[in-house]
Image (cartoon, rainbow, N blue to C red):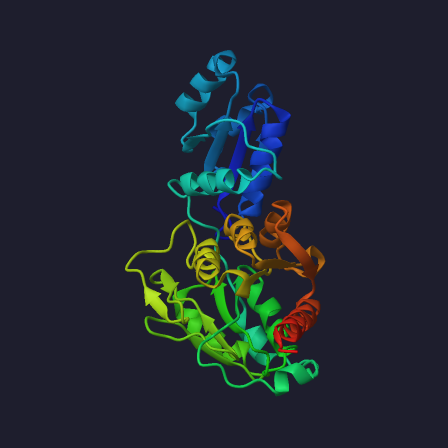
Length: 340
C-alpha cells in the first residue's frame, strides 16, 4: 500500500462495467492501478505485490475459466467478486450500488486516509466581511425553538469550504446548522474553534441533549448516531452511524428532513464518495432543498457531483455564492410568511 491509499485492480469483461467500477472506486478515494478485461491482463499482474485488492466483475463467467484458475492460484492478493452490472449513474439505485461496493471493499482494505490540514485554516487570514444583514432579520423576535435547520455535509476538503461559507453569512441569519464532517473524533474540538473564529456564529460539538438553535453550528459526533426531537434536541440513538463513514451525512439529512420537512435543507461541500446522495432526494420529497458546491471550487468534487447526478440539487455555487443564496432564500421565506 502506498501513501496510505489502498491500490485497487479492476477486471471486468465489459468496457462499461469496468468504467463504472473504476469511477466509483476512484470517487471513494482509492487508487485504481489497473483497469482491464481478463483477456488483456498483463502477465506480471498475476503475481504482483502492487495491488491490494482485485475487484472482479464477469458477466460471462464461464468464458473466463482459465483466467479465474490462474488468478486464484497465482495471486496472493484478495479478490472481491462484484455482484453484477452497475445501474446508470443517474439511476436512483446507483448511490446504493456504490455504497454496497464500498462496504464490501472495507472487508478487505482500509478506508483511504483523509488528512485535513486544520493548521492551515488556523493560520489563514480572515476573509471579507459578511453579507449585509437584511432588514427582515433585524426585526425578528427570538424564537422559542429552532425553526429552520440546514445540514452541512462535508468530507475531504470540507473544512476549507465550510469556513468561508460561514464567514460570509450574517450571524443574525435565523438558521441552525448541523455539520456532518467526515473527520477523526480527536479533531472535532479544534474544528469547532477554527470554523467560527472569524464570524459571529457559535460552534460546538453536539452530544446528547445539545439543542439546535439559530446562529449556531453543531458538529455531529462520530462516536454514535444522533437523531433530533421536534424542538431540535440531539438524541443519542445508542447505535453506530449507518454506512462506512462517521458521521453518516445521509443519516443526518434523513433525520433532519424527517423532523423539519420544508423548513430544512442541505448543502453538500467538497468530499470523497457519495454520502448524501441517498437521503438528498428524500429531503426534496419532504419539501426541503438540497444545494451543492461547484466542482471547480472543491478540493474533491465526488460528493457534490454524486448528489447532482441524482437530480435533487437545485443550486450549485462556490461557498460564498451558496452563502449569498441562503441569505436571499431565508429573506424571501420570511417575507412570504410575514402577516399582511
